[in-house]
Image 1 (tube, rainbow, N blue to C red):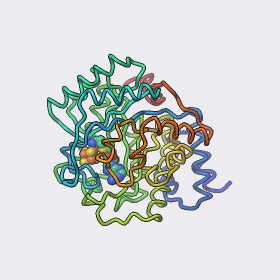
Image 2 (cartoon, protein in one colour):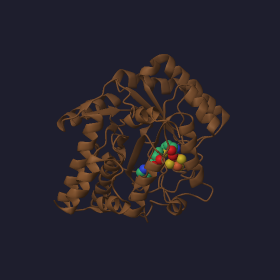
Image 3 (tube, protein in one colour):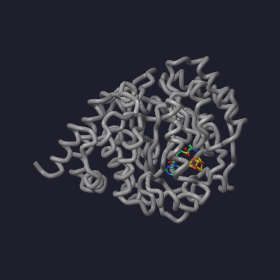
Length: 369
Ligand code: SAH
Ligand code: SF4
């Protein structure tokens, strides 16, 4: 058996079985044959834990107003070339109803970061209205950035089950280069701990292919996911945006897209091979790099897809990165297209099911400590 074959066989048998260097070696692979073997091994682990089934979460982009100024993001506070919008309760509930009608089973409410009592209370009201309409059968995920423990607790009590907050990179020096000085790596890490304490299913993740990031950094990110005992991982390639300090001079060529896609898929596979029972999303950023990027993500070990259920009228104003796909396809068209695409790779959709993370169920059966 080749050395790669031995590493993969060990990783498939047992979680947490790879050393940092071995993870970095998987992440570095560019050879097509080796990558095929890595993805096949990761897919085997995915199928063992979640079956040949993909769970969906309809994403509602609620607003592009953001107090933060992350150097990579198209809706950062200082991007003046952008019309700001914020959906009201009726408009969000319309998107929620669309999600229910589409039978997606779970919902993600996402927006820029706003910390204020008015906003906290708005989200609280919204969550109660959604719970009244959909009950416990609908999985509700928030992706609203850094907040106080009190705010997280209020939203959890109002009906949210899950929270997504990417660490972006677990390397504090790289984090500091991607954010202005008043953004804090420590606060972000502490927020993940607060979310755990509030009994959310906690999701985090990173961008891959950031300027200055190495495969060693990405291997450390995977070790960080384990250390934080995360339930859900959402990772995607970094995609430059011209109206940002980080992205304005990075040319977006075909070769660039291909290399970023390969790295994103390697990261999904290595994470699946190391953590085994978490939910992993094949994110829309993969689809921005290749038409079938999300299907490739599933075949590399992902088991969650987050189709956009936002009103098409607002999508152009919520471009965290450029090349965002499906700007003009409404949610019904996306549903049809996605179902066909998944069928073509032998996967079915977990219609009307929350698709909770198996890791969350497992850690709740373990004694706390
Ligand atoms: N404001 C919230 C949610 C919206 S941003 C938050 O920051 O958590 C959601 C994610 O978009 C971020 O975590 C980041 O990883 C991703 N993102 C932002 N800019 C990006 C870019 N240029 N390329 C790829 N992903 C990006
Ligand atoms: Fe705001 Fe999130 Fe973009 Fe940072 S990544 S600028 S917090 S929307």
